[in-house]
Length: 506
Figure 1 (cartoon, rainbow, N blue to C red):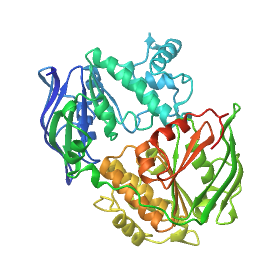
Figure 2 (figure 1 turned 180 degrees about the vertical axis):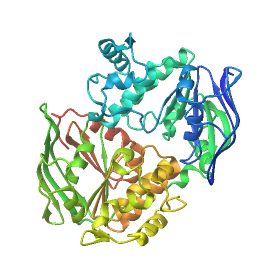
Figure 3 (figure 1 turned 90 degrees about the horizontal axis):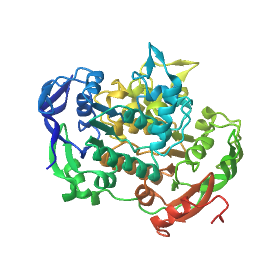
Figure 4 (figure 1 turned 30 degrees about the vertical axis):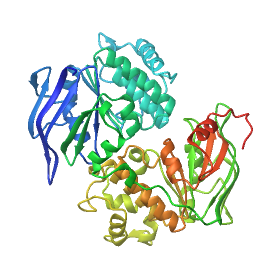
């Protein structure tokens, strides 16, 4: 048994109307990966915020190296060697990569920041993560996966003895996950205790040493990872077996609602984000988009949504051409809508309520002569909350008070209120637990059965296989494979995703 470097004793956290944590005893072992799992809303993030000093417990004690501590702020926690990588990245988009990595811990002499030294160190940390991101580049100009790498680099800059990693791989490719795991093992060998939160269950079994399961704010079980499997974890989390989460049933309709011909989108520096992409999407069909980071999946969905007017090619929706100059608003009116990859930055307005977020993309239908009626859209809001089983006390509740899975349902509900013919979904289950995933899957199946065509991108092979009637594989902006349900293996999808752009297109 490894040494316990940190533990909570009877930690309780009460918010108005909610008990987020109920007498939680959690042990953290030195030089080990300590897995913490649970559904969205189980209390994981609250517990991590308490350990990181961002929240204080209502009751209970924190014990560090055998002594009771009172962590009144993240700065105090950092001074005691506790660092955290938040699921919702705490980066400043207007600052450079190097400035973010050294934020509040700048290399300075006589109050003058040594920017050259910071860039040098930033490059070395990023090289350790096998990335050559420019330290001078603004973080807001980076994609989600690159921002995730910067957040990890920021944490590695600190001299931590306990490092909390909350969904660190949610936006990473399989290759990047392998690099991160190498760094985690390196930290373990140095005696660092890792607290690791992820909804990718296979990851947990691969990297973890100990696992603690939270459910409804209470500890359900603690075990060594070597003695459990994914079914054990799921049963402890949600009270039912992994086999209860059923995959997609077959698709019948053959009527094409979307046709894309020779879609191209050039990079400013030369080359292509998308290079001659052509495909069709049928009524009620679910088509999965699979590919490695940089394959062009997000760019494809954004071009279909009209976010890149400089792209070229033909997009035909039910016989009507959607030319490059057509605005996002008009495309929504024609029946195309996007559920974006980053729900915090692009899917919800964090300062607004659940109800306001749900109606945001559909305001024209509630107005009259430019004015909105009092309590506009209330019936649609209540019906959407009911039909999607959004767990919320009232539609006037702040959307950020919801768990990640319920926030994602709000983003989906907002899209559905536009009455789409085509639903585009970019990583629709990113950062949500297995039960919330199953609910999103069920919603997608239900929508497809109602005749909506769904095109979704996912880095999770098992999701692609379980949900897709057809799979389109991308590599470096081109389609490198097309597979029908039952006619391929996971190995074939991975092989197609790694094809050279000059390889023959299937």
